[in-house]
Image 1 (tube, rainbow, N blue to C red):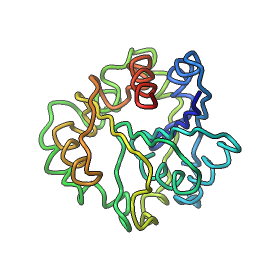
Image 2: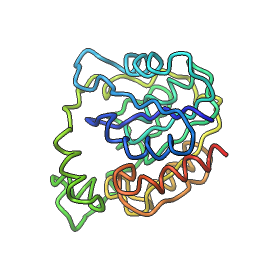
Image 3: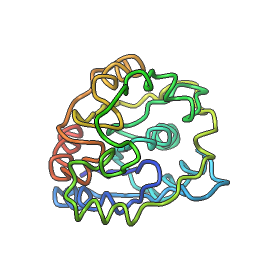
Image 4: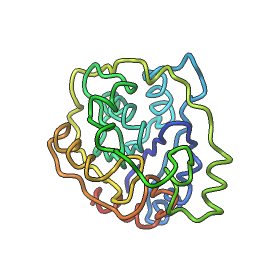
Amino acid sequence: MATYVLIHGAADVASNWDMVSAALRGRGHDVVAVDLPCEDESAGLSDYADTVVEAIGERTDLVVVAHSLGGFTAPLVCDRVETDLLILVSGMIPSPGEKASDWWANSGYDEAAGPQDFDRDDEVALFLQDVPPEVAAEALAKGRDQAAAPMLEPWPLDAWPDVPTRYLLCRDDRMHPAAWLRKVVRDRLGITADELDGGHCPYLSRPEELADRLDAYRA
């Protein structure tokens, strides 16, 4: 049995992992899904990591999973507690000293995104295009504001933590286009990303399939 630690992205909530959590528990694992202090303008990356570490408590056999902006927090957690595996799901990959606000330009995102045939101001079209409408509506209703503090703070580690790391990208992700992200993963982590069909939020659109992949990584 493992303990899966699920870290959400910007302006999100832990309960959006509920379907994945249920699937992992059905496989015999423990799950910790954490609400980060994303609405707190005084909370920086260290506070985000503190929140996760406190929620972990004395649990062991940790598999840390981070989505999107959660990629800035997850390695800090792995640097503080013994972790068996780190999995990024369409996650941002910071470099030492890099601010999240600079990550897009530094990674070549603006050029890679290019012209797109959907409205980027439409959250469903951008993030949730393959999520069942009722699930998407519920997720949007639970959305929170995202404070700027963690975006403006240099990432504090000198190097990526010495933890086995896997990356799962989503082939139809409109927020993090797959063709661009494959290169980012190679350049920044030195590994080849694994791939899953679907858009930016597979924990809502493909929770059973995502749980299968997470469990397979652990095995």
